[in-house]
Length: 339
Ligand SMILES: C[S@@+](CC[C@H](N)C(=O)[O-])C[C@H]1O[C@@H](n2cnc3c(N)ncnc32)[C@H](O)[C@@H]1O
Image (cartoon, rainbow, N blue to C red; front, side, top):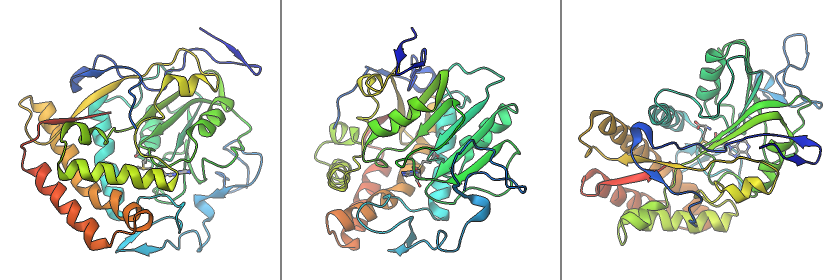
């Protein structure tokens, strides 16, 4: 169980628990190889930072001044910037995907065996903050901090949840540790997952858990070869590699987290149907929701990466997305996405 590492003693931290698949069907083998702080009104620091951060309660105009590209707003400019939009449409897509995760976990928010009186929770790349808010509601004793590059979290939140604008690739400055660190759907976000894992390890309390979840979209190239969907994922993978922030799930590997000190790691994948083809009613619901999420996300995933990294004209991106849409809605591919 517990292992010493640099003075830290952290037992049993699954990074991603996929059990027998539960309601979601198949279980994939391990280690697939595919290619202002939350200052309150009085100014006190409730998030455990030792240096001032930007709080969602004190956002300056320039931070909210998001660039518009091809009709969508994004956070940051240029080649190294995060690839997906942050506008209303993207927020709706994130809400749909949140519901899918809930269904995959049979209504649970996490698989790590956390206690009812859990203390501090960090949700890295929180997006709309739905997971963080749900955790704060479920665990009233907890203090939940959600961080993101974009300020797209609601203002009205439970008292025990705090949102901050923060780049997880910068040095983490929390002075108090966390009992659970959560990272969901962050594929393509980081240059170095190892550095992010290192920081997570450093900022977990002894016995704390790191839970990481992501979709393996690159599976399309295997399951639907020589199709628009395969071309889509290959183009995105290549563009994200060029950007230095690779898409895919190669960060979900035991070796990756073990090398920074984690022990008792569990890796698993659940199978999420894509499309309306399943017969089982829950599977059908998930397949339908995932299809809606994917269709809503095609252009959102592709536009910035392919126009900036591959110099595709926007019309070419829209054309490919249209072909993928036609393919996926034709229901001829009974495909699963590993999650
Ligand atoms: C696909 S969304 C997932 C949001 C949320 N985790 C969920 O599951 O609903 C990815 C989020 O990660 C954020 N993100 C990307 N790079 C980041 C970074 N370096 N630091 C903090 N957040 C980041 C993006 O702004 C975006 O909101």
